[in-house]
Image (cartoon, rainbow, N blue to C red; front, side):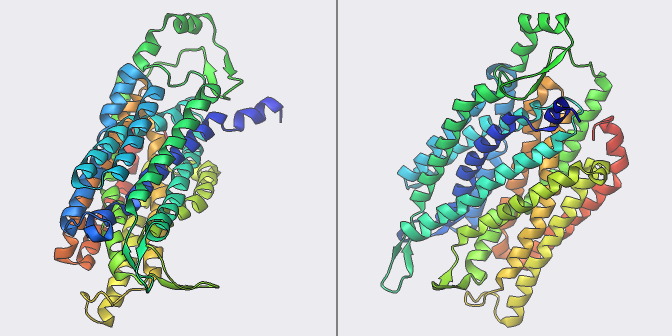
Length: 485
């Protein structure tokens, strides 16, 4: 095998710059998310805002829903006017200011101001960094699914370390305890401070290294890019493809082949089909930050015995790291599997359908937790706790389902989207999470009324039904994808 051939098989260095930028942004977001519902519901004297649980879960749902709605606007602005790289910087700085506001102003006014800045900032940041990952690869490059699995591991590496650090700050270093060691006040504001500092670090990395490793990728809007006279002359003058020596990105002076308008419309329609199914997936999955977190705080036995330390109560925030731990462990295996002979034969609808079914099956373990508590006594008794393993097994199944759907969805959107609509359609994909979080917030708010067992049963059954339907529609959807896999 020639040296040139080996080089083309490697992922470009720019992938890892985007990896670390996204890692620190996810550190910021998931660190904040790990404590948000607790900050909202704990009493003032405990370091929280004393908001009723049903209202707090709705606030949480509205916030996370809007976080995934604003990328629709940010993606459009990036495509039309400011370019993806500028959008990432604007978004990162705005989110950093949002975290610092939550740290500095511990009132309802500070809460809403901080969340608003996070919502706006995420709108600029989120769709554009994912689209840049897709832009590192030529059409038809089989490495793209593998690249998104690697990128997804970066997302979850940040989400993994954040709850441990944030939980230590809020429940340890900055917590106030009584003479018996019981926490009487939590240091939630310092968790927001750490999240803001993580966002700052990510922006420093991105702005210092992007030019070297990404070249001009994402610097201009697609409209300006297509109208650039110099680039047009280069496209006419030659048809050689040369590797960028600094970034490792394959740049081509040969214009991309035109796609038939009918084919283009059919491919875009597939994005909206996947969008619909993704809404129901994320509505179930996002219970992790609301109803599952509250259930863990009240009804899961978090007491363990550590060697040399004795009895230890695991902070509730730590459990937000369980899913990322599984992601980091399993994502490399999925990256290898998607590139294997068998993995390449699986269509996107098949992967996503299986992911939805696994999510539904995961809730069966939470039903096991409810059943254990029911068998032991009164479900309303706070002293009646379920085994920790039910929660861990739920997160494991949810993680495997997520790896079948989320990175695959990010990848296929970049394949199906016309270049001028790439960021906008990536935002449409993220909009699924927006709608899902509104639904998820409502579902979490009625847990208190209907009971956890009934709500988990409904979610499980409906998501499994959706996954089965997606598998049945496989051939139709593949036909509409017109050769994209």
